[in-house]
Length: 250
Image (cartoon, rainbow, N blue to C red; front, top):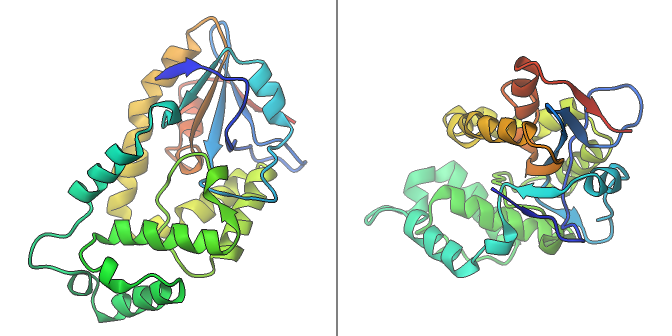
């Protein structure tokens, strides 16, 4: 799961706690003999505003290991593309219009057309793939640089992107966990069947791995998607229920 931390950081996002004062979005979990810093990534940062909050220097310098949900050093774009083509296309005899219905298809078509993306390229793809394609392209049009991102995460909404992403980035920088939970989970409220396998179940699978790191002798910096940390059944909540002491760096 882990690998030795290089002397540079990709654009990692860290979550903060609920406090009245300004805080750095870095959580420190006290282990038996060490500290594990929990970091939550946001998918994209603006190209002109990609400087990480101050707490990163402290947590990174104090860690012997960097652990990421997705190991970018082992990421193979061609393998990912092949997997997406195998799992992200609709069954023969179906199309996007039939799956979405006329009203939703019209909204998707309008969003795609506005971005210069032909629907002919999307009609055979599963809705979740179409959502990623439209959302990523819309973020790029709004000035968000994918090279500044941390890890991929599913974002379904293609309306009010600039305002929404500004809200997410602002809440992330000031460590406002409640606001992050509300913003990042809003789209899943319409699809509760997705939230459990993609978020809750994965959190519970990761918990034993975090506890293993918390029993080690050296410190670690762990990075996961921001939605995995906040709210009920988030990793911070699960760790608190286990009795671990958690504090936020200022």
